[in-house]
Image: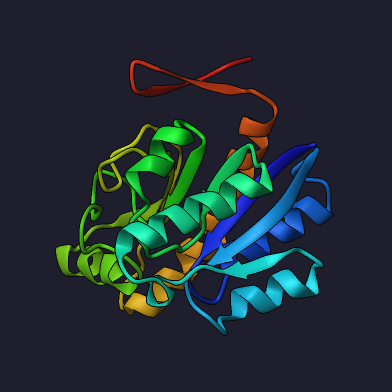
Length: 208
């Protein structure tokens, strides 16, 4: 069984999409071994509990410095013996030591078509506010591997979503979640679990 850890910071809608797709066997042969949150009391932990998945909190606030937190975060994931780390709205910078230890085994979902509206400062509603301010006709979502840059790792999957006249940032956010994020992230996990992609020269190659 392919084991994953899902890392969250908030409500956990992408976590729920993964839970549902594992349950209905859209994602095959995959077990969510652990959910890690950097915040106490977030709804994502309730989702994990309801699905009988172990949920833990590793918060920077509980450690003397960022180095201690980074070590604790890496140990928590190491102890779970997972094959893949999935960042599903995790708003903490991933320690370099974790990126080194899990090279091409950490994926992230970003709510735009990278390289548009990505990088430092682009998260949550800020992404959609920027897209609407620019007047783009399409936005969307991207699943990518995590490297030591911000949203710079090899792209696995992308899906465009139409921007509609009069959209608010929240309306665009919801449409991108429903039409792209909740589909792409489970799809990427299934592909990785079944060895359907590899990284060659910092690009994702799809295998038959």
